[in-house]
Structures are given as structure tokens and as C-alpha cells.
Image (cartoon, rainbow, N blue to C red; front, top):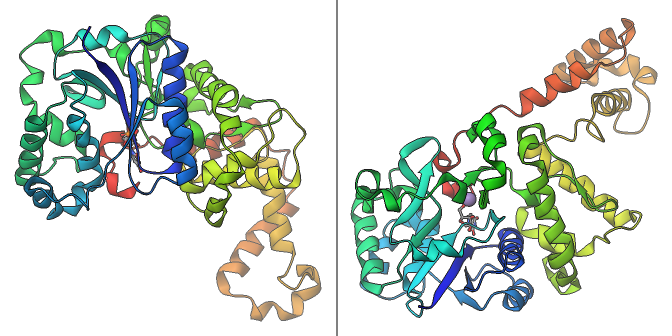
Length: 398
Ligand code: UDP
Ligand code: MN
């Protein structure tokens, strides 16, 4: 049998968490093929060594240091940087056939048969089924193809600013020629409800082979209770709740213990950006009552979850708690005195604060009924307005 590999990409430590869980999901279903991860210099040394434990090959790719003509051409278009990185998968010529998997995918069932498909095989993009989704695709590594795609990209750009636009333009015959290159949707099923046909998801759920967490809400950004090891499933993911729990189970069983204090050098960006997540997760003790550090970590996770529109609305971010926090904040002046003590100095408060305070006071004194679940739902619904399709989001924003 020819030499085949599963290939993924990660440009930072947070996506590396996805890559590690993905690799273990492939091992869990007993793949016989190699596992390859392409990394950029922005992946920490500590993370690289963890990736080396589970992947057969950790291949560093560096767009900016490349000296060949095709790479220089793409450098004139810096917005294609991330895209260009993914295309490096065509350079893994030690393999005859590969399947590229986004690091936000999870292999649920053995899919080794994909290696029997031809280049370029992929599943339809849910939002535009005449295009394929580039989170999962079968290809043949080949330097000439790589150069040709890069040349094409440099000349034509990408209609969506990402790799999916380029690949769909380059392999434009995919839409209307060989049906064997159309992978069943079960090889790249979108997890997020906005992209899902829910009755079909339920009907064919047990046929799903590869699940794709396309969109802003990645599993590693969802609320997770380290003590109970249970992930909190947001409403938009209810149908895929057991797959999200599977992601976290694999994380707990196979990945967490590999994260170590060596990731502490990343402490400087703890809680500030996704890149600090891996280091922060290394501090968490699973299955144990939370320490102060753990609580701080979970508070920061909740903030990140808020920011991607995923609210812990039945727990710490419930209507009751939010309301309590608002009133506490409004009733306490920065110097610690209560607002009631400070009525005389109200003119020193800026107009918007006065307005908020008056509105809050009015609401607080008008015999407000106990907040009903409907109120929580309203907040959640507002915050979780459907996102634009994943592939329409600019890769630059990541
Ligand atoms: N990726 C990465 N770092 C980033 C953004 C993306 O390594 O900052 C890689 C990763 O493999 C990811 C893929 O590029 O799975 C495509 O991005 P993403 O999955 O976020 O796009 P979506 O599927 O949500 O459109
Ligand atoms: Mn993806």
C-alpha cells in the first residue's frame, strides 16, 4: 500500500490543542496511516515537543523565509499568508496520498478509506454546495502542483480571502465533473447548528465520520468544568453535545497530562489571547476541587466564551448573577463608598453613568419580579445571533 498521511496545520498553541485532540481521535479509531502536523514558528517549543509525541512528523513551514520565486510572488500579497501556509501540505512529497484535516475537526469513525479517493476530493460547503469545504480534502503531494497553485493564487487571489476560495477556483472542475470526488457530507459534517439541517443531523448522526467545528466557537473555547470534566454545551451545539464531550474526554485522557509547566513561559499571555490557553490549561487539575488559580483560569475562559458569543447562562453568567454584578457596580463608587452616600456629588458623575444609575434605580425599586428563564434566554439569544458562515470570515481576523 502506498504511503499515506493525515495532515493538519497549527500556527499557535491554541489550535495545537485542536491538533493534539484530532491526532488522538485518529489513533482512537485505529488509523494505519501516518499523522503529520505542519507548524509555523509561532508555535511554542514546549508545544512542539508535545506534538512530536503524538505526530509521526512535525513539519515546520515558514512562509517568510522561503526563497523560491513562487513564494516571493505570494509575499506581494501578505493577506494570503495563512492560506499559503495550508498549501504547504502539497510539499509533503514523501507521501503518495494525504488527507488534509483542519485542526478543528474530530475523527469519530475510522475513515482510512478516504486515502483511496483521488485529488481533489472534498465534501460540499454547506453554505454554497457548488463549492467544497476545505476543512477536509484528499490530495496528492506534488511540488509541481504546489508551485502551480501558488502561482495561481498570486495571480488571482482568493475570492473569500482564505484557502477555500483559492482551492475552489483552482480545482473549479470539482463542482461538475467527477462525482467520486464529492465526499459524503459525513466526512466533513458541520457541528454548529447554523450550518446544520437538524433533522438530518439527528437521522444520520451515527454515520458521521468526521465532525468539523467550523466557525468561531471552537471546542477549546467552550466552558468546561475541570472538577466534573463535563463541557457545558451551548444551545447552538445541543445536537452535537456528545461530540463536544468526546473532544473534552480525549483532551482529559490524552492531552491534558502532556501539557506541563514547561508551557509556563507562555504565562505572559495567559488570559489575553487564545495563544495562552494551552499554558493556562496546563495549570488546571482535573477532577479536583478548584484552586484559586483554577478559578481565575475559569473566569478568564468564561470571558473568552462571552466574547465568542457563548454564555454560561445557567451558571455564573446567569441573569441573576449579571444583575447582581450590575447593581453592585452601580452602587459602589470607585473609592469603595456606596453611591447612596454620594448623592451630593452626583454632578461629578458623567452623564451616561447618571442615566444608567437612574434606569437601574427605577428598575430596582419597581418591584422587579424574580428573573424568569425567559430573560436568560433573551440575553443568550441576543448574544448568540447567527455568525456569518465560517469561510466568509476573514482569516486575517484570526
Ligand atoms: N489555523 C491555524 N491558526 C489560525 C487559524 C487557522 O492554525 O490562527 C489553521 C487550523 O488548522 C484551522 C484551519 O487553519 O483548523 C482553518 O481555520 P479554521 O478552522 O479556524 O476555519 P473555519 O473552519 O472555522 O472556517
Ligand atoms: Mn475549520
